[in-house]
Length: 281
Image 1 (cartoon, rainbow, N blue to C red):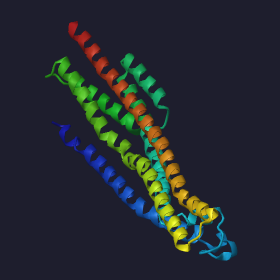
Image 2 (image 1 turned 180 degrees about the horizontal axis):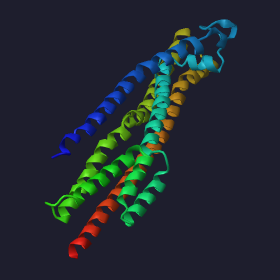
Image 3 (image 1 turned 90 degrees about the vertical axis):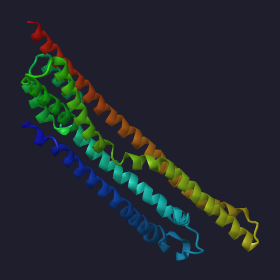
């Protein structure tokens, strides 16, 4: 009963962290859009990128060509900026979750301490490592000590209690690791689709202008199509980088999850083996 009031503290902390991350994600989108719009209007749309300073009719350089890609360009730039921001944010969060040292080295040390029955040293190692993996393992080790002093349960019940505690601690840590990954995953498909939308609208505009002028110049058509294809290029770039980042972060999270599962299994098996042997004698 003395431990009961402590339990709700962890979920509250995680809810606060989740709320803070949600606010961050909500603010990032409009801020990125404003920045992208400013770049589109004041940088790409600057008269210096057009021959003779004529934005409407002057021949554009590369930046001017991007500017003529149309209103979809700042939307695609917003997505690209979002990808950069959330990539940095995920690197920071997952880096903190991994702890101060190598996760593989940490797991080997914990397993070594468990094999030698040195639970206190394993707990001290968790304090040194910090991060999500260490938090889960330390929670399991704390439960290990509690179950050693519990006289009213048999070994199987105690083992189940330790396993359940590790699973609950893992469930509290995982949402923080996976948060905002859905945004990166969404950019994978939305980036390409928005790029195609920009290209289609740009080509419609190019053919419409060509038909309205009554000209059949292939050079004018080529210019119009090249400007429209800027959207496709930006969309594919955003989508490709999003796929790479999503797979990279998923791989890192899977590695952390595996480390937690491996060490949690070792804790449970160590407790079961040591106390069954004690029971026999």
